[in-house]
Length: 130
Image 1: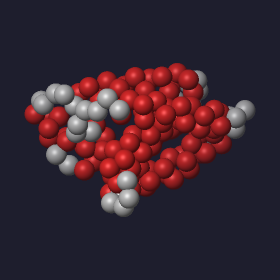
Image 2: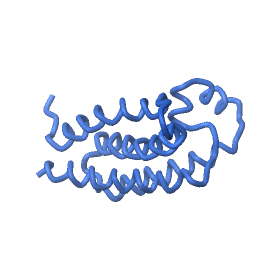
Image 3: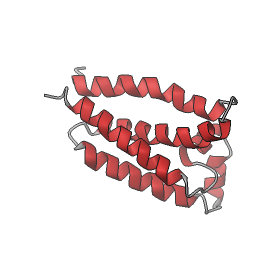
Image 4: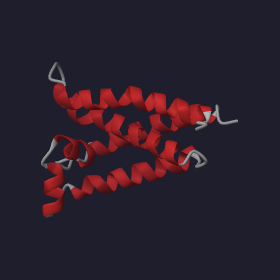
């Protein structure tokens, strides 16, 4: 198996941010509400940008970031929905982490920030693809 250098760098960054992302949900120190809800949103966007870059390394970073931002914004609106299958997903830690459990307009700014950071990370990774 021959992994390209840019994808390997993306995997390493992903392995670094995933524990931080989970930690934001468990953090109970000062400003814990911001860390739990907002900082996690930033890392959530970066996570998905990296995942899609790893899966689609030939895609342009901007295209990945726009799709990730759009889909996560749509997911935010699903938090208004109370369908049984969504409630089942939200009933555990991983489900809440992946699709959330409460709508907040302020989340969109953190999704944007995370997407912007994700864009620069993907551009950094892309430098190693040549």
